Length: 262
Image (tube, rainbow, N blue to C red):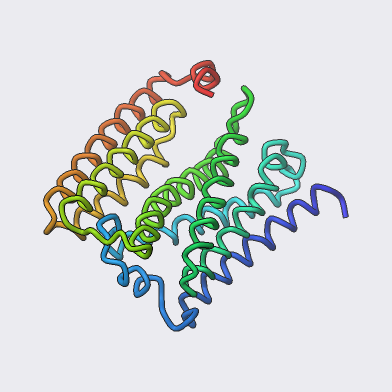
């Protein structure tokens, strides 16, 4: 099999396995509990409202688009897709590992799977943007945007997972100290989101963080420090995204600026 065809097949099989495992987690569900029930076991202040998890449908739709796009004969020699394939395979393996260890509540390994997934997505993000060559419109929408959405949500999920592990280890303060820690994490998430939005002209990543923060604010409306901080950070990110979009439309983020940002 030619290298391009092998790469294409591996990417499709890895994504199919990931989607199948996620389907099992919902359909069975794995270990008798769905994802929402497992989340509700941990009364922590960083978990968003349940509706926020519907973003997985958008992420997986985008990844299916990526799988189809990279399988096109015209893309089999695309060097950017070739560079990200090993990390994409790692991300699929980490995603499957995360699902299994989450549903079987093996949190010590679960957090390692989540960190591996986040690391793989950061690597994909960086490799896609390496060099000065700009992608075409199709590649931007079918490769760049799906991985921006994916990395954005896994950024949020990592924050939640860290607090879950802390809770399970005995740090179960959901009072003032817990609220303050949650608020601090929201500020950190906002700094990351606005930095990426501005430096890489990437509103998609930042909008995922806004989505998550609004869902957190709604779920924890009874905790003023948590809800107000989440609303405030979501507003700040939204303003930066609006500014970034205007700058992009006006040509304020050309190739030279992106290259310097990298």
